Image (cartoon, rainbow, N blue to C red; front, side, top):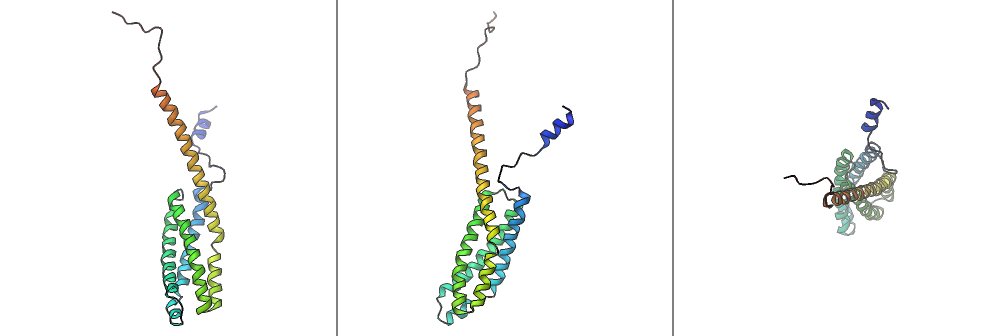
Length: 182
């Protein structure tokens, strides 16, 4: 075997675990989640929930619209940070949970829009929200695969640590030729 082929084998990046997308495959999905959050935020900025309260709606609707604006802004920021370092499991989970929270809040906001503003506006917001479904599902699958990969890495590290511990704690080998000279 030539030195060049040996070097090529050693320089090759570690194989990607089956099912785990590479950083450059998932990063565009995460960036699109951030862009989607920006579009949601712009749509939420057009909602005047205060006028709903004047029509008899609960103050809760106004608080939910405000919360949705804050959450979508945070989604956008987190997505940008995660796109730069997609291997961050904690940040991936945080973004995914925030997406779920926004989706839950938007269900109520859509109800308020339908009842106190315009059914067409509620339908438009629901349509905008639905645009992120495939990206959310892909992020979820990525998180599951990333967690499984990290768990596998920890198992390997633990086995190696146990092997090293056994080597270190084993008594030194005795040699038949060790005789003290005087």
